Image (cartoon, rainbow, N blue to C red; front, side, top):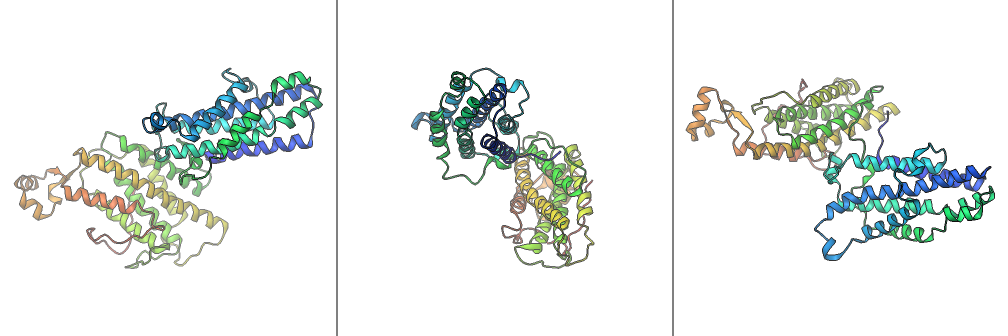
Length: 454
């Protein structure tokens, strides 16, 4: 099973539209029933566009409540989208499900509608009915993102409505009475005008689009190690994001994934020819930056190891982290010859997956930083008193007593601030931003030591 994204589903819908256009230009309908089936599927496509628009409008409207609705009226994209959707629904009818969905259509219009409905359902899996995000991707989406999606849908509507006249002519050629064609395809120029008006709202697209939205629950493909690693990293990102709202002790999971962060950067660096034993890898780009970032993850792992834990890591996180560590060793062993330069297509594929894993770890750091902040604010982080510096112990008699008795104490604010700064550091992508050594961080050994993911 391949991963499917929103952009891929929209591309499928567009490809089927082109297929339908080609068929209308190059071939005829051989019977009236064939023509009427095509018209019915065309109506189904228009209904799918309207349903898709509704799916994008709801979270956008919920995000805008109280901002502009009552003060300035509807924003332009929302106003034009509602106009187009309302006009489409007036043409396609109120029956639910739409009649075209009750039979398995074989026309390009039916296949395009199916892809559009799948894309709408994909968006729906990322948001609850009240608009709350269910995935890390959804958490980053803004109302501007949905507006851009609606504009893209306007372009799809323009392309679809352009086929009304050719479809009507082919139906008449096949023997469908003109009166029947006129009822089914009554001249949709006002609809086409509304679609063009929506498509014209394109300038000012946000950086974040719906294109990368994928499945929220990923079934791991195990037929290829690189593909499996990619799937497990994406699923791990989803699982880590849920830790933000987890009320249990999530510190063991944070510590486990920090160890994986060391492994991801070490293996990626070796794959690109880095020397892990060099005292100073140097540079803010390339393999040296990966080594430096791996050492930052190592410092974070060591800092998290000082806190007391009360429970094992989350099962889902543990399983994917252990498997990812195994796959990293298989794809890019740390004892590979230095200076290896990927040349073959298979090497490039592995390199792309490793680079993707580095990016996923940056995303994971953002979500883990939020989870750690929740633990800090709730006072849930404790540390063995014997692990504290002597100056802290001597300043506080109760801490000194805890040290003598081998007890744990609430983590000092300074220790929490240091870890929070470490999370900010590792959340920056190692290639796209500098990775300076933080002065407050302890010095570690010059080699990236192996972290056992257990």
